[in-house]
Image (cartoon, rainbow, N blue to C red; front, top):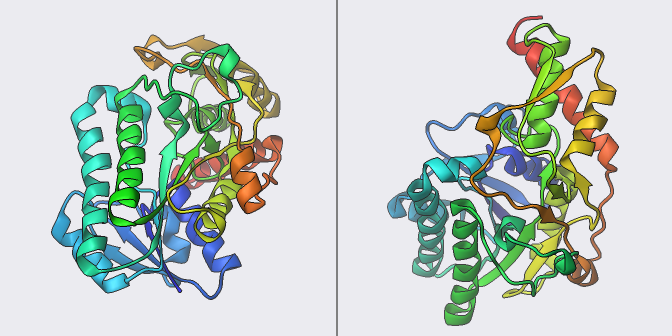
Amino acid sequence: MRALITGITGFAGSHLAEYLLAEQPDVEVFGLYRWRSRMENIEHLRSKVTLLECDLRDYTSVHAALAASRPDYIFHLAAQSFVPSSWTAPNETLTTNVSGQTNLFEAIRALGLDPVVQIACSSEEYGLVHKDEVPIKETNPLRPLSPYAVSKVAQDYLAYQYFMSYGLKAIRTRGFNHTGPRRGHVFVTSNFCSQVAAIELGLQEPVIRVGNLDALRDFTDVRDMVRAYWLAVTKGTPGEVYNIATGHGIVIREMLDRIIAMAKVEVKVEVDPARLRPSDVEILIGDSSKFRADTGWEPRVPFEQTLTDLLNYWRQTLKARHGL
């Protein structure tokens, strides 16, 4: 069996590759990367996977990569995935996420392939959620509040359309917030942990700069999330959409307090206006009962362990980066 991971050099992609190599030894792992991709997340895996250079926005390169890999499973994780960047570059976000997926689907059709394709959609699609709509089911209205969320709605519905029109075996997973080691520093949990680590090492003054601390989020450990991706393609139903979430929310302020409690130094907290968004999603808590019923998935990693591992990751990374 062959599995192709788009975005293998990224956060979730690298963890998925690790999972497949460790837990699914019969699966040959292929991954797409761009010439300018940062490779540190998969440096320890490079001898165990087959990397194919490809830009999803270029149909010719997508066709060539699929022709070379001919996968049984495709995990489509590559995307412009940082919500604030979608405000400053909305067209690039839409082009990368929507056109990239269209090229992938058209190449599958042109080559006559029949893979199961997992599309990594997002809880951000739900956008404006009313308090009486929590926990959020897959049937909840989609009210996107950012260009990124709009792009994910498009990816979601495009996958459904190709399933209905062409029988493409697409499975859509609406992943709620996920975090853990190797999470990009621009994302909230990772940003807080990286700031604490920098303060501990004397690289930053003892002030943590923050944005909106009142949002309520449902965090899943990335290692639980990528295991869910595998279960989606092996036990999920093509054409369906699934929430992946713990079902438990935490206010960002409380999450920050937990990280500060693990710090080895005293810190202050200051709001940075530059970190506030034009509009923010206030509540995201997911109901993943449909996915659990179909696949048997349950989250395994406690959130405290996730934060501990993430903080230790930044301590080690910053020490190595600065030769400390």
